[in-house]
Image (cartoon, rainbow, N blue to C red; front, top):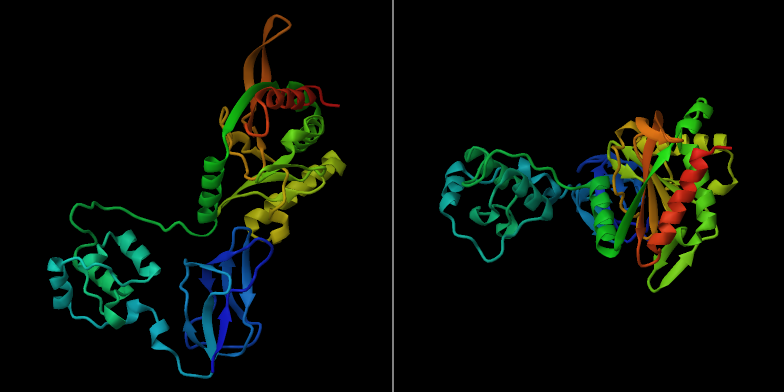
Length: 373
């Protein structure tokens, strides 16, 4: 009997995973602990080694599919290769006249096709109801879809040229997370101007980020309701200061967590923030480095725009955004002057944080940034 490998439990709170990439193919001989598959969860991407040696007999779940923990993924054993697991695109079982006849086919009550084939059909603009399936039991295969698309010039009536990309991996997780945040959180944003001139002149080679984190931690100690998460009908007030740092990567936005920010010097804050950002972009951070933040800071530097309204990193109750800093006219002691000015925005969950408290928190952060030291 072949060994049936199921999606394992990948950590606390992880109920499902997406097959990001298979590292083996059907018919391949593998040894125990050889790289088998990459799984994308809502926390991170992990490479899973093979738990057994033998021939890859059947791949049960295709790349891009999202399945719950415990789902059978692959059969490994000495039996023959299962043809059903081979790429349907390589199976030529229909003649061109049959595909041409599909133009006149009537829609059936339910088209038999895997989620992968349905996604490919969507990308190519092919109506599955118009295809006679050549797979087992009349199932429409990837080969059916691609051949029909090629014969029809890559388009179906009423559809112009276009390119579709499935929502997968980190981008899919970001979409889910932000949808939850937008749906669950009655968010309000307050924006204030900050004069960074004194800090610009005194910070030396340091970036603005460690000063911002230091000011944020001090503000959270003064206004503890912003250093919180909402858990059902309870507000959890955290007595730790684990700051999430929004980092843009090639795969999308990732939020690693800088632990115990209240106990670090400016140099330590900058060094740890740099390490986390580099790890996030390289995809090398451990799952525990991507969860458990109590408050989030986002800063896009020169790309930050004049200001934006950041979305709360659910289930937290507030987030602070630092936006582009540059020379702007300002009134100082009744005189017009050119100062280094930037805007800060604080978005907060109005169920937990009152507007006056959020504004006071933001002003306290700005006061510390305008008077460094």
